[in-house]
Picture (tube, helix red, strand yellow):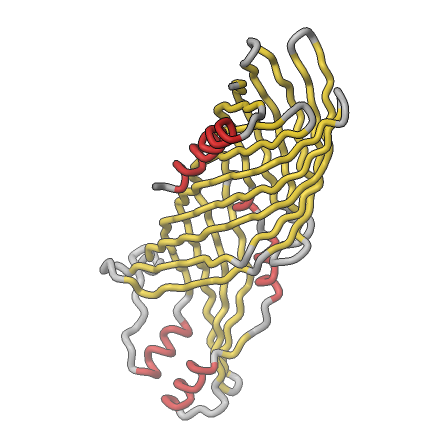
Length: 342
C-alpha cells in the first residue's frame, strides 16, 4: 500500500477504532489545503563556496610530474562560488481529520498528502591552474545544471487540546513532515581548454572536444533526496464567537524541530546512455525553533456539520546545520475542511 493512501485513511481508521472502543464524541472530515514551502529557495549553505581555498590536486600533480619531468609542477583548483534560482513550491494537499474527546480534553489527528513540481537552476564556477616555474596555464569552467523536480509531501500531526473556559484553551502536539524529491536535469559545462589541452598532450590522451557552439556536450543527471522533519509544539488558542453560528479563533505556538542527516544522490548519464559516475552528498541534520500560528473561523452549517477555514504559517529558524539562522524555512497556506459529528 502506498504511503499516501495510508496517510489519508489513517484518521478515518482511528475514528472507527475510537468510536467502537471509547464512549467519546467523535468528529471526522476531509481536509484540503494549499501550502507553500520555500525549502528549495534557501541558499546560505552555498556561501561557503565563495571563500573556498585553493586546493592542490595531488593525484593529477603527481601524474603530470612523472610524465613531464617537471618536479615543481603543481595543479590547483578553486571553487569560485555558486548561485541557485528556483520558484517557491506550492502544494495542493488532501487528507482527513479525526477529533475525539469530551468538553474539556480533545485529541486531533490529521493526515495530508500532496505533490508538486518546480525547475531549479544551479550555476557554479571553478578555476583550475597549472604552474611550472614562471609559466602558468589557467582554465575557467562554468557549470550550469537545470533540473525538473517532482516533489511529494506528507504531513501528519497529533494535537491535544484542553479547554480552560469558553474563550481559551491550551494545546500541545507533535508533527511529522516528509518531502521526497526526484529530478531529471541537464548539465552544461562551458570552459577554456588550456589545462585540459596540456594534460592531454602530457599524458597522451585525446584532445578535448567541443560542439560547434563552443560548449561541451551536455550530460543528463538524475537526482533524488528525502527530507524528514519531526516537531514538538505547545501554545494557546483564543476563541471569539461572532454572529449566531460562527467562531473566530487564533492559535499561537512555539515549536522545536529536528531534521536528521539526509543524502542527496546524483547519477550522471553520458551521451551513450550509460552512467558516467554517481555521487552521494550528505547534508548535516538541523535543529530549529520558531512560531506556529493560525487564524481562522468555523461556521456551523447544521447540528452535526461545520465548515472550517484558516490560514497557517510555520517558521523554522536553524540553530544548527548548514543554513544560517536568518535563512529560515517557511511553510504557509490556507486550509479548508468539513467537520461531521458522528
